[in-house]
Length: 302
Image 1 (spheres, helix red, strand yellow):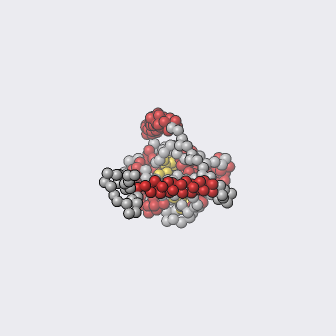
Image 2 (image 1 turned 180 degrees about the vertical axis):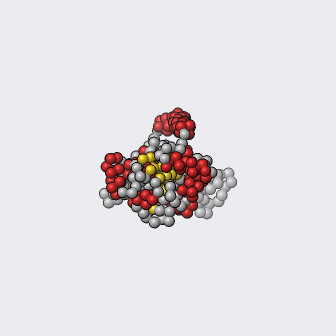
Image 3 (image 1 turned 135 degrees about the horizontal axis):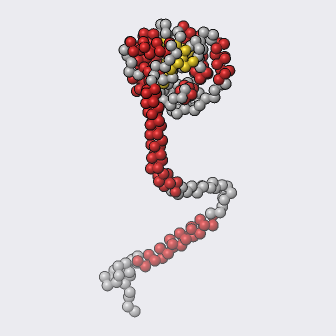
């Protein structure tokens, strides 16, 4: 899916993040992998990581507009932001959009903390991708133990502990204010709001998805093997013979004997044609005889 980026030492990263932002503590996987120099508030203003310290909890939502399950989870996150953004939970949208048009739509529709795209594009990116943080964000998802999106985790900014590693499961389908309030209260108490049954279903679905992808890859390779062998066994087209350039000055005069002989033969043929055609001409003043062949002069008796 994406290449893993080199991580700094967790202990060093955690210490650095705590010292640089005394009001916010984040786990090393989030403090080191996300592009914090490009962190923005909902109005698009560049802010430091310490801006999350006004609330005890921070929800990091890894999602994208092209992802259908992410769009299904969006109303629940929007309701959570509407009810608890002022005092309890800061929502950080970690967008894995593919193009800048998708990113602009995200900025207009989702008033959350986010990461701006004002950064140079790295050299190796998928075709058509305009997200400068594509690999680093996918690497963060993998380091969180997930294989896809949506992925949402809740962090206690006072201790740096991950309170809920499956917040997307706890919020899925929740739009009732009372249900969302119960979920947030459990997070504030340091307890996970997702049940073991939710996590078991998620793990099974993840396992099934991985196995299906492997089976599809195996079947595709099996069906394409004869085609690859045929293409490999086909003879390669022979290269055309190189055309040698001839130096006219070097070979000047070599064709003259041939041209002279040809001129002699043409002159000889002309002479033969005239000689053979002469008897066919009627002699001047001779009478024609119908008994003789046409054009031949009649013979006279002695």
